[in-house]
Length: 246
Image (cartoon, one colour):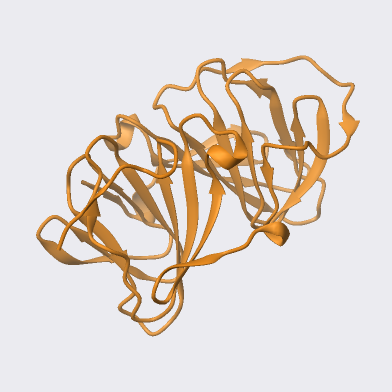
C-alpha cells in the first residue's frame, strides 16, 4: 500500500510557470497508474503534444483554462474534465489572472510524449471527450455520498474510470477489493479516513494520495464533522471489476 502524504510528494517544474506533484506512478510503487497534480500560473502553457501509447484525462480542480484538443480550442473551468485519447494532440493555456490546478491521469506508468506543431485551431467545443460540470448529474452512490462520474466509456475512454465522490459526515463507501487492478484515491478536499486490509482507521488528509494494490480490501469513509471530497481513479473501464467484502 502507498499513502503518499502531501508533504512527501515530489514536485517537478515541467514548463515555465507549470509545476507537477507526483501523486501516483512507478516511483510511488504503482504498476498501472500515473497521476499528477499540476498548477499552472497565469500566462503559462503546456505545449501541444500527444501520447502515442495511452490516453490522458485532465480534471480542472481549480480555475479556468483554454484547452486545445484535436485542432479545437475552448474554455474549461473548475469541475470540467477532458480526455485526450491515444494519439490525439492536446495542450493547455492559462490566460486568466489566477493560478489553475489540474489533476491528470494516465492508465500507464510510462506515457510516451511527442510535441506536435500546429497553430490553426478552431474555436469550438468538441462533440465528445469533454464533460462539463454544469451538465453533469451527480447521484447517490451510498448513503451520504454523492458521486459524479467524469471519465469512462461514456466519454470515449479505453481504460480509465474517474469519479468525484462527496462524503457527508459519517458517510462510508462499501468495503471491497479489485481482483485485477489498482485504485488510486486522492483526498481532494477536507479530511477522510482510509480502510486498508485489517486496518480500519488510517487518516487521509487533504492532498494525500491512497493507492491500493490488487486484491486488498479497502474503502474510504468520513469520520469527521465536515464534508470531504475524494477522487477515485481506476486504470480500467466502468464498471471496475470488484468483490464486495465485510
